[in-house]
Length: 128
Image (cartoon, rainbow, N blue to C red):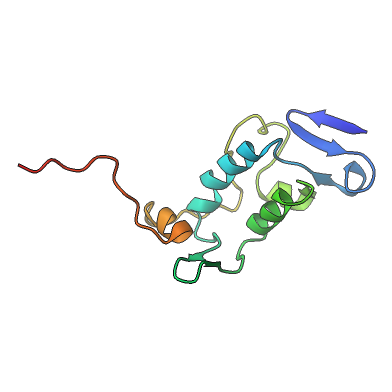
């Protein structure tokens, strides 16, 4: 039987409440918002090599668990959920802060680290 708690689905039985696993995101949009607000702006984020097209190894247990859950059952352990700041209280807040977030020195590093591309300005400066 599924139990709905403020947007987080927990399943009873195998892989559910009995073994302390939770589903922190109810859909892919919530996952993307959280990941962009936290992992993509964190020094521990997985890197990407634009020349080879290969992602580097995970350096953060939370990012790895959430990424694997995204392509699996959507569930993570209660321990990882606690470390990432998940709770029934803040589940309604999109992109709540991760408990182990360490900000990048330069915000523009986000695009370079994830895509290997330079972030393009929206508007070019006018030349006289």
